[in-house]
Image (cartoon, rainbow, N blue to C red; front, side, top):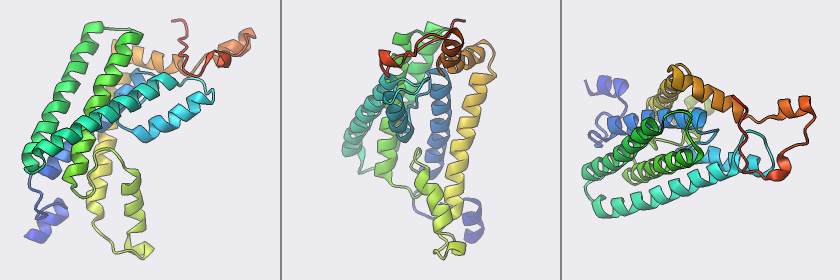
Length: 248
């Protein structure tokens, strides 16, 4: 019976109790939030900091459609959220369940505040509101990642999947590895994928908001085509942090 349970749920009998399903839920939320932030806030992540570091480098090199300032703000907000999450872990870390409940409560509160703010400001989202939303969601995702790191449930970081995918391949018996428990890793990857799918669907096919998100994503690709057609000099000299919106 235990073998069947472990095949259906790889964390069964691991001693982590209710932590794995809650962290899987947070992984879904991560995918959803990052999809919304990337498609709505102009090619910036609030949870995937690897992407933001890369985007920051692209933007500083003069790539069109990317904002160095937005990536930098997201990185700073995430860092601060992780720092605060570390403080929460130091206070509640002895009791893992209480620690996760506290961390989830803080993250849920911040995400709710961001949702209320987004509804209040309406469309199109102004630049001050955009940066405010990036900060709020960055704080939420940073604190969530700090909690996941301290809880240390195997293969459930809620954000980073590069090592997870590496483990699936490198640890497989076909590669001469120990085999491990690929089911846990597949669940983590699937959770992130489903969250991203739902978030993107809400933005791209959610009516007026989705139309605006799609327009903004296209606009933030830059006006290179329009500039070339009109033979306007490149805007690169104005600085990598410049965000250009095409006329709507």
